[in-house]
Image (cartoon, rainbow, N blue to C red; front, side):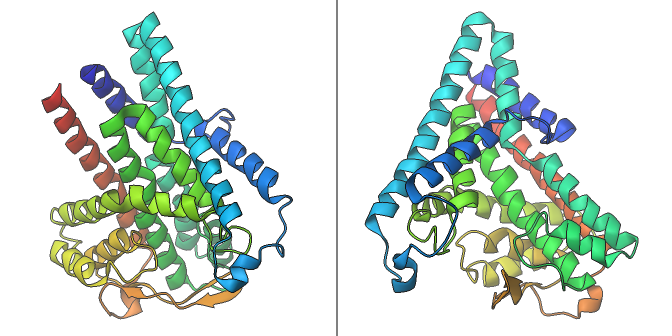
Length: 334
């Protein structure tokens, strides 16, 4: 079984590199998870409006909404794992080749290497052509901050930050859980990750309801986030354009500065590798958030458009190295 898992794991990774995450694929498992979470969200909290959740103003957790949030995320995880296990069992009974194909498909849907690079490339192209307005618009599709007034330098920094953070959340973490528990582990992780991205906000509506999803996501990403930082340091050692020591120093100094226990690890390591400073104040929903700075204090003149392409290459390299490490471990266990 380990060797079958190994074959599916490798093919799924390669499939993700080739096709990424097609927008037309409506029966994508993650999209199905999202629809289930949305349905439970509406069932428990009602229409998408604010104003009924007093726990946000008091700072106290509403126990009822908190339990409803736990039920939502656990049900999504349970159904995702059960559906995956049943599908794989049926395929295995028919043919080992069908089992490997099914695992490859499910593995591919958990990963986002090609998608992450593809979604950030339009921003890079707009900057290359000097079209800042288009760059701001394209950036708004991949980041949560307000983009309408960002400068060229701020756009570049925002792209690098989202590449670093999403490399950890969307590639290294799922690879980690896929390697250990197979597609069932990958789908469990994606269910929690999807829940966090949809309801894991400290907003008025989700202050209590989304807390469980956010905490579980933090737990599952804790080790992979630090592996991501290590991979950035490792990859940086093989490029004259990057600094492995700078990456380590920035990580050691800054990785716990962020409000998230995990985001600071890949972002600080990336900042140090590139020799630039990331983070700093940014607007979210019209509100200025005083975020900490990550990386060395340098002149912003060093932040040029070529850094986006370089960061994309780092993401791709780290993904491949993580896959190789996982494959080696699985092979030794087979």
